[in-house]
Length: 435
Image 1 (spheres, rainbow, N blue to C red):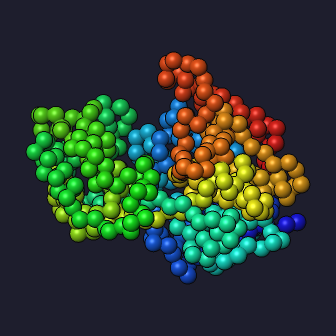
Image 2 (tube, rainbow, N blue to C red):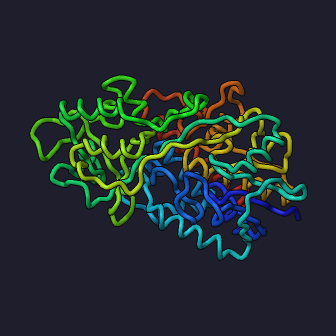
């Protein structure tokens, strides 16, 4: 039997390793931890959640919600674990990142079918199936190894992480818990601004000092991770109609309606830390402290983690990979996770599981399998495979990548997307069982 090497123990690599190991296959899992870490990492644990602790909406009629249910049907270990360590966040699936990563790390280290290697891999074994899941900050050795295979450089974009604040330093005489329009539980902490407060904050934000970027970096920021200061520079109301939108919220401390609202989300179950929603940033640390303390309720905020911005790598999927996420230049090498061009935690987990399914098919000497664009997973890979090679960019789960359903009512259409997707996944499970 071919040896199975998985390089990278992030979300995609951990999912892939556990899926194959649970089937009884011997897996060699390589990661640079604990000898070294990338600039985005803060923990020596595997499956680390490095930016927001949110796995996005868990509403069953959203693309993110449907994708999670597809993965549960397929037997995803990481999605199951995410629900185990869920923290309150309204309709979002937010998790206690430390407990989540500690749990996955313990399983990986103790699994009888997984052998861990602390190495910075610089080449691929010819007599092995390799799943490359080194993530958006791959080491120089891995970058060079892939370049030698695909014959071209990576593309680059920038990912930004939001600050985390010590809950005890938030002024609860100004902040308040509420959900928009009082829907669901009041899981978000809100800091409301009047027009004058917003104007002062806005002008400070757009004029604050940022970390200097290299020239080639300046036009490659992924839209969904747009730093708050860059979004603000698009216009005075750009963030007020974006992450700071005040609609559906009433400030119990003041009679007048909020002009803008900054929302904070629980970072852990004990609610000792809060993440600033939508505040990915490239401001310098002193400027983050100065500017964000202008927000009512955060005047004395202590930052447990400042926002950071870092380079992300991804390959040109439609040019370099086939529909099964294998290198066209070497069919024994799969690429999973953000390195392949999926964007997001759940999408990365999905890519690791998708690769694992087809690695198992190869070991069993059976034809590889794919999903139709009636499913979120299939829609992702349909997009990745057929995207324009000259303008390829990473993709999140969304209903726009699915085969369309003709239904004018949006909510009914979304419901039909869900029913159709989960029907196909259930049929897949019944046909193939546990691959």
